[in-house]
Amino acid sequence: MQALSLPLSLAALAVVAALLLAPRLFPSAPHAPATAGATRGVRRGGDLPWRMLAGAVLVMSVSAAAAGLGPRLSGFLAMFPVMGTVLVGFTHVQAGRDSAVQLLRGTMLGYFAFAAFCVAISLLLRAQPVAVSFCCAFVFALTIQLLAKAASSRRQAT
Image (cartoon, rainbow, N blue to C red; front, top):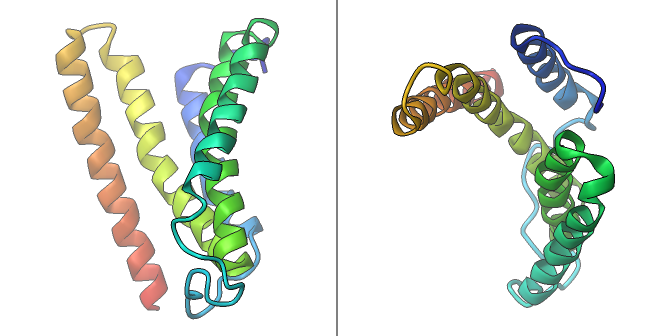
């Protein structure tokens, strides 16, 4: 991944294609969400210190390996696997497989807005002041998130 450098337009298309494909690779969605902790007797909120520790260990591991990984790969690993591993792991333990799959589906939906924000920042920072760039990127990402949520809600209703 370090050696791969795509033009922004191709990278953005690859991200959108991956985000459209990823939810199709998950197991089929259950009809009703499980009640958190109900099936396994896990006390809610009691695992917060463990979540914090797991996140800290993963962040420190990526930070320790950053020099060898390089800026692109360490930046990629810092965001997605750390956040996803902690959230999905603890959701799976507390609420089961179906809830973990629902979390992953929702996360994929949110990545459309994250990708839009990154594309907007990469284009705007070249020509606009930092504050203007970030404000415009935020509005663009929020718009994309609302559109993605509306599309998802329409699809679930059918």
